[in-house]
Amino acid sequence: MSTPTARSLRVLLVSHYYPPHVGGIENVVRQEAVHLVRQGASVTVLTSGTPAEVRAQGRGAAGEDGDGVRVVRVAAWNGLEERRGVPFPVLSPRLVPLALRWARWADVVHLHDCLYTTSWAAGAAAALTRTPHVLTQHVALVDHPSPVVRQVQRAVYAVAGRGLLRRARRVIVLNSSVAGFVADHGARTGSVRHVANGIDAVGFRPAGSREERDRARDRFRLPRDRVLVLFVGRLVPKKGSDLLLAAADPAYDLVFVGEGNEAGRAAGRPGVHYLGALPPDAVTDAYRACDVFALPSTTEGFPLTVQEAMASGLPVVTTDDPGYAPYGLDRDHVRLLPRDAGELRAALAALAADTRLRERMGRYSRHYATSCFAWPEHTRTLLGLYRCALSGTPGEQPSRTPVEAA
Image: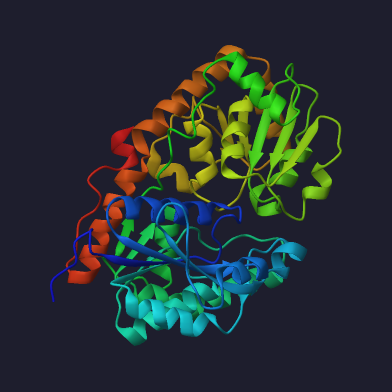
């Protein structure tokens, strides 16, 4: 059987969440879907949905968004995220027949993270229909504060995760930490590929003038005369929102974008501005409104929000995670710190006091992002990996890595 070209390739992307739900993985899947369609592929996304989203779609039906992506939503209970900050939707039994239906349709199934029931069902469907699957593993084991959550993660990765990783024709990772994790959990030798996420460097860009920055601040009722430190992500301990709140200081204000069980602590405090979850166009304005980006998260490697902040020309203060090592970041221009509130406060205060330092770090951020991250290049790499998965050939590493491009 001949390998389909990009213009005839049918791709099933599988993710536990998808926009309008806010989060890093769903944003990656959305951008992959849109850019695969632009390359000529036919793309269906299998994901969870709220009861209202599923009713609007129609039972078992597939809706199409404005960019030509077919979206199939399965009703899900999302109480674990709402009550405990654990992003794990519990999907209805309709997931199984829908996964089988769309796995039969697809030439290749692309799973995102092996922790979720969407990936388990679609991975099993791919095996039953003999459709090759590719898997992107975004993170390793998350050091969650709950021992129960940590134990559940270990059990899932040891059983369902190991099977999905072992059967995957290609396993995509963002950093060396996750590469080691997937190798320890069953990924076949030679199947692992390092592929950086892309970034929309047109949508995520610095403010073109002081006036544009002030308009963005006015949109969110943020003060014009304060240094603003931005956090974007779920407000949960893994992301470090609690640590950033502990690092609050009179030298700067904190701005939080996102939802989570820490949101109540952020809202209403002096010098803290809680904007809640924002639609994509508003998120880009939030970056342009602020002066510094801070994300003291744990075990995330190179999160998408850090890429967005860099593309937006913001100085970045984040955790010194081993996942950054392959990217060759200049530590004079990106602050990589221990997860300590005192060190975080000192770094942010120093940036708040030094306009020239912020400008220099911001220029580095923008140059690095535009040089190293691009969704069209990411998508072309995906298509190459899909073709290798279909043909059974070993394939090659992407021709340009972030380290080489920097």
